[in-house]
Image (tube, rainbow, N blue to C red; front, top):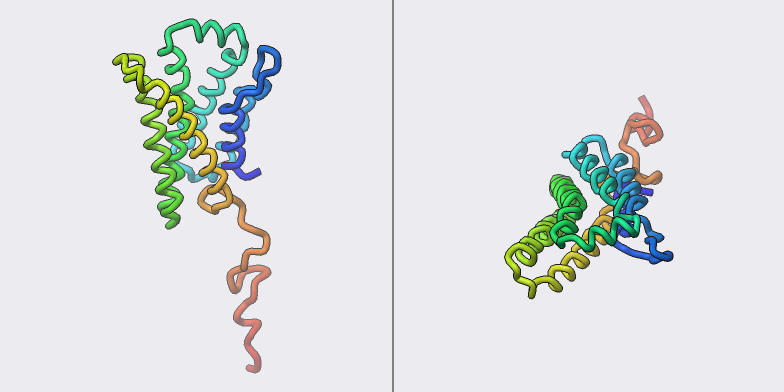
Length: 197
């Protein structure tokens, strides 16, 4: 599995719920393990690699107790701002990842991907900020649009991660049938084509 495929699959597990009694069969901690494995397999020169690893680990650690129904119910009974605060590591991870990937895509000349990834950064920032208006300023009319935007942003991010997973700048391995440079082992050496003295 390519690095971004692992990250995308992990975010799918985090984003979906499959009830199994009172538990979620698609356990969020498992999703964050997949995300973390994907991040660790990204190219060594990826910017902010330590930050990405720390945010994924923090989001995973937060998700462990929340997977327990009793803890999840207790948090739900608290002020809604607590749930928002607990979601910030996940939103931070998504924003930083998309920012880093947008820079790599732009450096590689893949501007369409870079634009979509920058859009994902902007939408993630809006999703993180909207609860301040909804909860802090009491603009409750934004509650439903904010929830819908959060879902659409996650769908966009997952789709973009899958779409970019095969790009070399995203850590995809080179295809086995890639043409070899002249003069390299296994390639056609110019000297081999010379005939005569």
